[in-house]
Picture 1 (tube, rainbow, N blue to C red):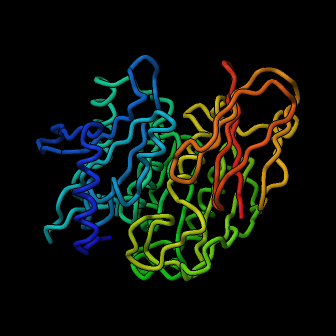
Picture 2 (picture 1 turned 90 degrees about the vertical axis):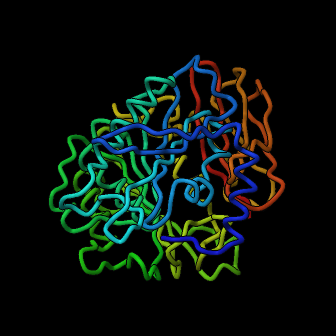
Picture 3 (picture 1 turned 45 degrees about the horizontal axis):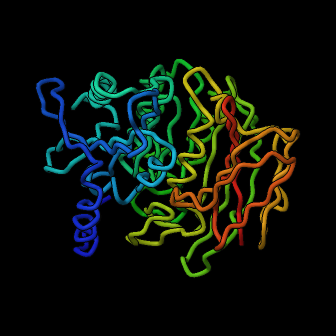
Length: 376
């Protein structure tokens, strides 16, 4: 995936200047090669507590800078205090940047990314039970390779417009159930939804991970509300739950969608705007740690926390099982806190101002629960 228009690049330089104080540009040497990366450190990070780490991997011919702003997790990192690293791949024999995610000889990118985690952990206070990988296109392929070969270090992965090569699928040897999310357009001409030479069809990839994780073989599915009727596509959400160690597999099927990142501010093709891929990926990640379900962010049972109506065109009522003091936080699709208050009653009301996807979090000193809200 290569983003080639000048307006995008100009936007990168402008925005990069705004965020320069938070982005560390550095490198490590691995296998005798200087490997550079960009690390986004949110303002909330102070080193006093271990925080999650998200690897955000660029696509073929792209780079760390483009991925930082195209697959944008920075507002979410600010709101949720996690570190975000965008490493660069190496160059192939056509002088294009890539990740060695297709089998065969070449750079040891699995070893590099593992060494990068270690290097960052030596400087920053990282929760090594909560390291995640996501990426666009070739970066999605690479995330799958990490799930296969580095499952002892990567808690969960998400791929946007990527898949697994047939070689990697045949040689995949994860040592634990790995929660997986795939976001993919049915009109993707670069990595076809139904597969191609050396590319595994998306339904087959989902089937592999459903079987490996021992999830329920039949998915729960729902149409994503078509809140943007001008983006040229719609979306459907599938969830295979009930896997070993609390694992699941999720898939956003973008009907008519192209080789693009849903919710992206930069339009490089048919881009779904009914939901934000970065927000959904982070929501998915927060459920999991290496040891299984992440209890701090585990989705609550209905007896602990319910929301109704949902979806809604108006306000949302939150109902709790007790009247203890708790903090309610409402976050929009780009990670901005739009409402926050403390409540001691058994009910509360949140009032999103505009239509879209939101995450509402209810927390006290010992627990934190989150649910999605959709205002139409």
